[in-house]
Structures are given as structure tokens and as C-alpha cells.
Length: 80
Image 1 (cartoon, rainbow, N blue to C red):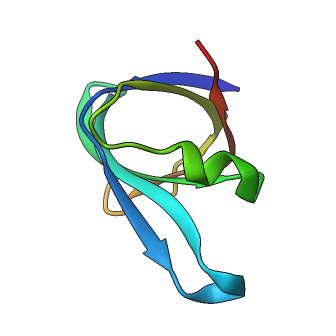
Image 2: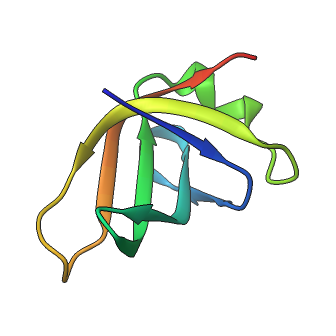
């Protein structure tokens, strides 16, 4: 599991399954600045997202190569 503290991110929304929120941001990963999409494990985590507040997320990062965005799946927001 990987833990990320985010203070600059965008909340995006899908229309699937009644709508889901996810995070899009950039992080430093293995010496490179990379875009990452963060998908949550549970819809109950999603309403707590506020782009003006720093959050800590914990999940599994998938890296399909430098040409592609990173993906964090099964993310949970760590309540501070």
C-alpha cells in the first residue's frame, strides 16, 4: 500500500453507477513527475473530497509505463 498526502488536486466525476468522484493530480514517482488517477474503494469516501483541503490517501499504485498515467485503486481517505 502507498500513502500520498495531496494538497493540489482536482475532483472529477463519472456518470457511471449513479456518479463517482475520483481525483486527478500529479505526483513525484520514481524520480519523474507523473499524473495519477485515484479511484476510491467505497463510494462513502467520495463526498468528503474538497479541493481546498489537504488529504491523505492510501491505496495500491499501478504503473503501466512512463507513457501512461499512474492509477491508484482501492484508495481510502485517511481521516486525520
